[in-house]
Length: 172
Image (tube, rainbow, N blue to C red; front, side, top):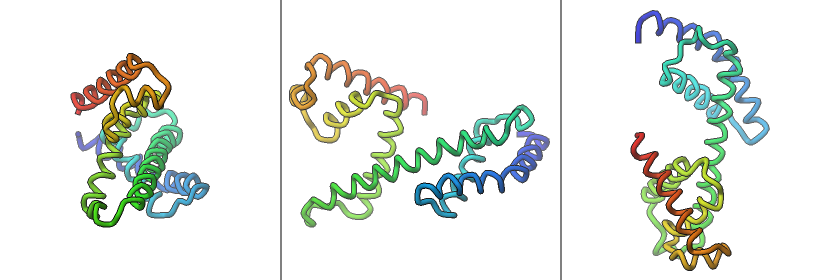
């Protein structure tokens, strides 16, 4: 990145950081947000902008642009928290002797977040079929019975989810 581009991004950051931080705090304020989450989200929004290599001068509506990035990041953070809560609730039902260690719990949560990110955009039923198969180890026959689908539909949904996983893996 050229020195000129770095300066432009620096000015863009200084011009819009305070507004973005306040905007994020306001959005998070409606849903249990705190200052540290707002700071992290604002920093991540600017990091995404930097990674996309967009020229700040080409952005006609900087606040709308940053607001869109921040909204997506807030939704991702919320979805991650929901996954963590669901996982921890499920763990609480396990006997202590078979519960994973805190380190394993962290790795499992990261894996769940990655799976959720990869499957993002697929219909909920496709995700459900995939998760029953991959996480619960259910057979296609059992999944079909549980979800009132045909085995052929379960197979088609699995193919769709696996293709999504493959595409995500090949793009990274």
